Every structure is written in C-alpha cells, then in structure tokens.
Length: 308
Image (cartoon, rainbow, N blue to C red; front, side, top):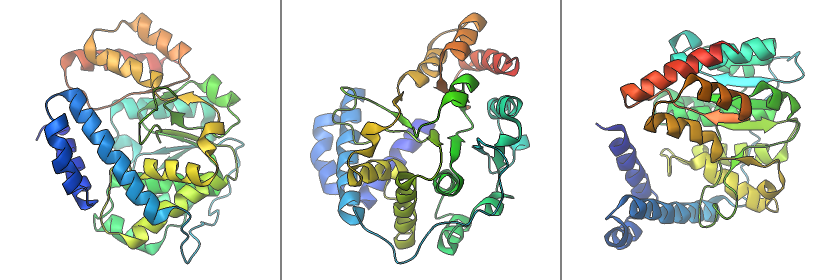
C-alpha cells in the first residue's frame, strides 16, 4: 500500500476511535476536494482530538509515580540520546552517518539506545512494557515514551536518527528547547510543535509532566487516540504551566525541513549541501525516499556529513 495512503487510513481510523466520526461526516463534503481542503479537514479534527484529551487529562494525576531511578552514572557534562531499537548496524545509512558524526564530535556523551539496552538506562512501568511487547504500543510510540523518560531522568538532548545538528550550535545551547511553529504560522494549528529534537539542560518539571500524562494515557488505554499523542501533551502541559512553550528558546520548526523538501524537488549540488550543513543549526531529513533524484541527493548529503 502507498505510504501516504496508509498514513491517511491510519489517521482516519484514529479519529473514529476518538469518537470523531460524526464530525468527520459533517466536514468531509466541504474539505475533501483538494489537498488544501484535506489539510484543513485534518487540522479541524486534530483540534477536536486535542479538546477531548484536554478534558480527560488537564491537571489530572496518576496514583503512582512514574519517575525512574538513575540506573547508570553518566560521566559527561552533556549527554545526547540517539535511538535505533534494532541496533545501529541495522539502521539506514543516513542514520548511521548521523550517529558517527555525533560520536566524532561528542564522544562518550552520545548514548545509543537499543532494544537490548534501553532498560539498563531507565525504568518503565510493567504495563507499558507489556503493551510494547504485544504490539499495542508501536516502536514509534515506544520511542516517544523512552525519550521523555530519559530526559526526565537524566536531562540532555534527544536527537532523532534522521536529524542533523550543527555541533557548534549544540555546544552553546544551554536552555530547554524543542522545535515550534511560531505566529502567525501557528495560528489555528493544533500541534505547532515537534519532538525530533528536545534539549533539556537538567531537571525540568515540564518534561516530567509530559511524561506523566503520556504514561497515564497508556495506563488507561489500549489503543492510540492519535498518532501525535505526545505532541498533544506538549500543548496541554504548556497550557497547564502558564503557556510554558511561549517562554523557551525559540527554535523554528519550518526551516529545518527546507533542505529535505528541496532534495525531493530538484538536484541539489554538493556545494549547496555543504552550505546547509555549515549554516543551519538543525535539519530534519528522511531515509524514506521516493525517487532516483532523491536517492542521488542523499548520497551527496551522506558523503558531506561523513567529511565533517
């Protein structure tokens, strides 16, 4: 099945599970005719799902603490979390190259998290482990769980395997941050945040609260209400904490995607790629390509990262 079509079907299924079928049936005739209409359709449903989650979880607390002990004593001042559950040797070349770049720049401060060692670092409730093992929680959403538990426990920086980070920027970054879409672009958007890069410079009540709500959700539910569950809780917890995300380091969510989108559209020269790597603080790429053109561009990108 086409990947985009599969994502659409999964999204619609989650909306139905969230009880949004009547709303979907009302909105479809008005928005289904074109791509922009479908974007507005999904945005309206996302806002409705967020409202449902907010009614269920805003200021709610669980009966037990989800905090993990520090199972490993970390020696580094700055710790970077990089996850590939199947092991780095089984990761796509882009991800392996990103990992080696980080190891070259930050050495032992880079921690590779795999299925074999994840529970050496953090404690996870048994109900989450069981739901991950039986497939109720996918690897993608298990990754969300692990990132917030690692950051709640140790702090540091979470970097998705397809994200390139300029080492000079990361060395200077001392504030909490995650990528956001800022006004006016964020107006009307349910989820103007991303989770592919999160910097937590120490104990942080915001990320701990996000962790608590995410774990509480999975304690009470056996099905995902929305693919971007973590992002919904980012927004809900920010609302709980006097618009917390309005007062953190401003990292734009749009420009880091520009090189990836450009590489889908046209041939990009090695000079352009080297300029991107030099000038951008952070960039989000993908290992799922759709064309020979894109493949060729990624060969140049991987080669350029390898030379840094």
